[in-house]
Image 1 (cartoon, rainbow, N blue to C red):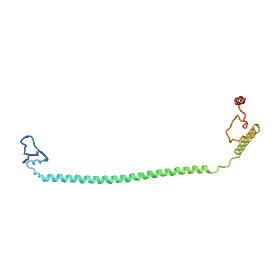
Image 2 (cartoon, rainbow, N blue to C red):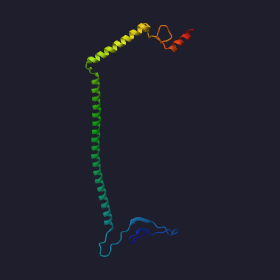
Image 3 (tube, rainbow, N blue to C red):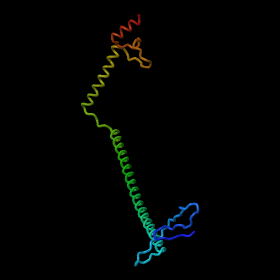
Length: 176
């Protein structure tokens, strides 16, 4: 298997299959072009070494960029943790203020009220007297207050209420 080299072409195998005339294997390695007359001739190992150095340089740059990005990410994570702590502090402060407000309201509701004025006391006495007189009027016209230990039956004799006329008529018709 002999290989031929031409300027700018790929390395091609010269051996051919007798049955297939177009069977040619092409390598991915390119043959460097010859330098122009008067220019320095570039050697194959120098080109490969240059490409390797370029690749290593790019890898170093990418590693440095990765390190820079990692530092920036760490700084951002610290900022986020600080913001979260600040938000938690604000939430705790809001809850504490809410608790203080509720305690203040409870204290205000539990405080003894200021004494009533003379007019308010007089009005309360009048309301109590009116209620007492209404109860005594009921007891004198109807009888003593009934016991409420069993269901109320408006048609019973023990519970004497002045019934409306329609109910009195219904009660009279039932008793007949």
